[in-house]
Image (cartoon, rainbow, N blue to C red; front, side):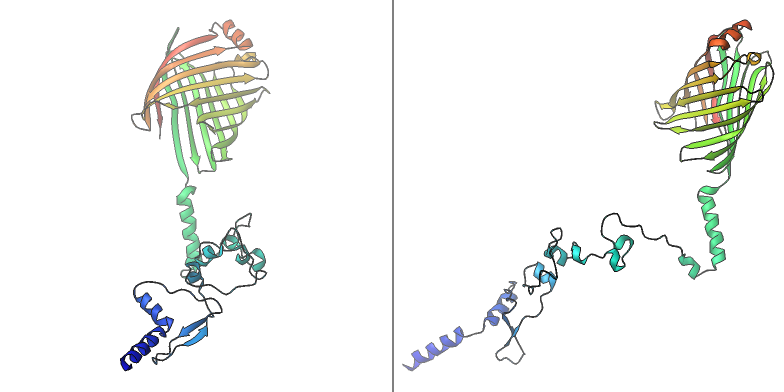
Length: 361
């Protein structure tokens, strides 16, 4: 009977081994122990090889709770209301912030610390870190130079949009249109010149404008100044106000009103479009319309739509700054302007074959 009693006592002792030992064995093999309930005692090993004390669980880290390793203590729903847009497990892992815990303007948060919405922008910084290390006056001068070199430089520009030979009925002629300016991105002094004539004769007409130009947006300038005409007939001086710029769909447009020293009021609108066939081959249609408020027979201008020009030029850009071109131009006078031209022995309309160069510097 003695061997049987000893065997029975050994089996009983094995059955009474604490569950913590089994959990430790599972932990060695990579299995996570089951989490105790919030009020379930937890075995605490004091390292003396004896029975471990059972103490209640007082903490459950949010990241452990999110991964299911433990269950946090229940909280009062009134103290921490749930946010449907931010579940607790996502908030515990830092993926979002519940609405109840999001900083608000009442708590003193500003700018990017505020929740999404129509929040006020953060204040613009009014200090410069470099001023803590270097004299403020020297840094202010350096910033001024940097601003000038990054868009405030004073530069000059000169372009010949037309410099061409015109083969037309009767005597062949020539024509030019040029523009130059000096200044910055906002304020400029602009000089425009255009004219035409026939070979072997005096210049038929010239027009020169001296304008102050100011940018009123990224693509448009307002201009005001004076215009001086010379050529056949009496000279005229005009007060000028106008605009020029880049319209939607890349149309270059320009318009102006002119009031002469004789009280004559006239206007002009013109534009062109660069249609790229290749990177170097460009087709350019253009149009110009001139109007007058009253007849001016001494300079051959009638009221209403006085004349119109339509042109089509094909140019090849050898380089961006130099492009020869060929094309056609059709011009027509209307109303009293056409009548004045016929009385002077001129045609009211005509077609020209043109060839020339477009260049800028």
